[in-house]
Length: 61
Image (cartoon, rainbow, N blue to C red; front, side, top):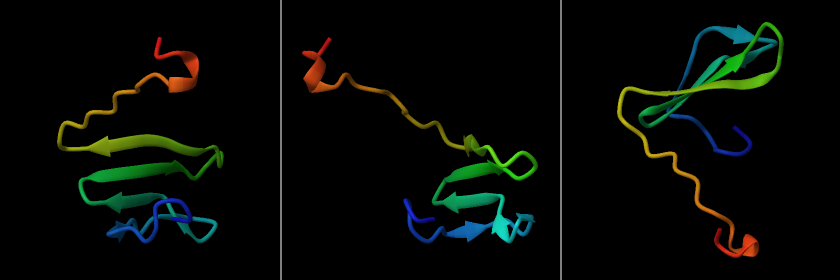
C-alpha cells in the first residue's frame, strides 16, 4: 500500500495483521501469507497488457 496507495478493496484473510489480497480497480495483488515472500500473483478477469519496453540507456535494443 506504500507504493500503490489505498486499495479499492482488501481481503478479509490476513497474515500478521496485513491483508493477503489488495484490489485496485480490476487488478488483484495476491501476497504469500505463509512464507512471507511478498507478492506472488497479479490477477485480473480482464486482459491486461504487461509488455516491457527496452530501456533507452541500453540503446533501445
